[in-house]
Length: 499
Image (cartoon, rainbow, N blue to C red; front, side, top):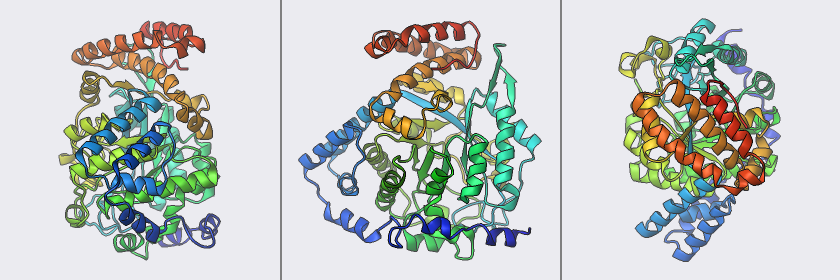
């Protein structure tokens, strides 16, 4: 099958129509604009009442979200950030989960005008990793100390669902001896960022052990979507993309991740789109997105728009939207990536984010070749803002009191989908995550940390151990003795013990 034939058979209209309500999708642009206009200049008490609802870990309504988006009072914004941090601690404690992106291909049939991978960008050098290259890239990621990654793919027949499955299997099968000599390290969870697929193809990924399935809607605004995604491409179909998460749920993948590419359209509208998306997933499947990302558009080779969009998002607006997302979807993890500068990442982690990446290389084959993005500019989708190593970022977070987590225990114990959402809402999952964060952090400190990072890490881990010992939940649930046994075993050289 050639590229044209492959492209023509991708979209399944029946797998869009089944989710529509009276022929309409869940993005009602008129109501979004009306809410954003209606709730300008919000009352302070009204805002504070909404903050109380967030603290109860309740999904906010679109109207409540619009109120928070319209806050411009400095005192209220500070209260919102303080509440966002309280919500984050209640649900996720003080841990930050780490991952690395692994770009497997940059061939693409689409023509997104802001993207370095678009099919008509002659400046981009194309390559699809062989399985041997995937293995070598995975080895390089593991050797940094990572235990989870997100594999990223262009939309092309050479990187179809079968290729994704093969690469996932290769990643899972790759093991490396640890530098300390304590057993081996491996990738314990493979998340996937790929194009929307049919339910049948998504089932292939589910059977292969996919972690979270992530699709960026890019923009929820139909007219703008049409402007930046040519109509003769697969990605030109707005609704095929809009219902990618719904199809994933029907395929058995109960951990899904939503995102908008901030900078394509007005950032307030995009936040409202994400909230409507969360509500429709809850309405149709009973669970919302496990994580939400808010990537800002960054410069991309051969793309004028990537640096000249009229909707580019300022740092202040980024701070505001992160705060609102944490409050509006309090159970969801928030992902800030190395697209952002080191300083901004450090700041917004303090009041909302739960996941981030480090030592990231987004060039095809860049990990094993040890290339920085300037050496590989013709093989990247966009330019990163923070290329620091995992060790550097872990040390900085430890200095700020955040514990690094490489935990994948919840997924392997079956705490996914509606189960994890229920536990997150009750503040219980965060308790298990705290224990597993300490166990995986102990592994990292022993196996990969530099002397300076280990010094900071030891101070932090001692504090965490004291907190665990003095938290009634762990003794009441008879978890403390098991945790302490596992911790001692890991400190003595065992690996991959979890609760």
